[in-house]
Length: 168
Image (cartoon, rainbow, N blue to C red; front, side, top):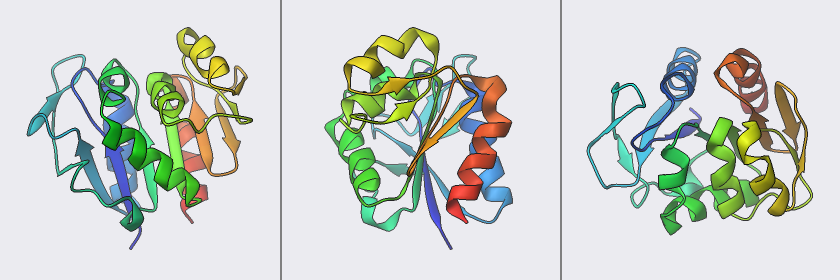
């Protein structure tokens, strides 16, 4: 059974955590809410709680097949942890699925995996992604090798179709 990490921290965008988390479980994947280890429970922008199932320090990247990076303000907290950036970079370099939506691109920039990649994300972080070496486009979902990116919650259906296709 394939194993997927969904990154969580306080101020995550509700739908961008829960929709992929539940959709992946529905398809039979082994899904884990992976947090920074700072808390046992993280609260969304609207106060919805997501329990941490693994701290990133316990999550061996080599045992995961994919990571989903949600948006909200959470990515700005997550990327402050070198273990989070290393986890994402390791999965990316091993050819595993790295899927980011909205502000999740901040972690892609901090993990230093954007050079030469075509991506999308929330328009406010376009400069950050471009400065990290990416070519930014305004599209619902962009697949560049094992990197999948989307812009906002309304893109979740296309985002998850691309993630599920990449995991098959």
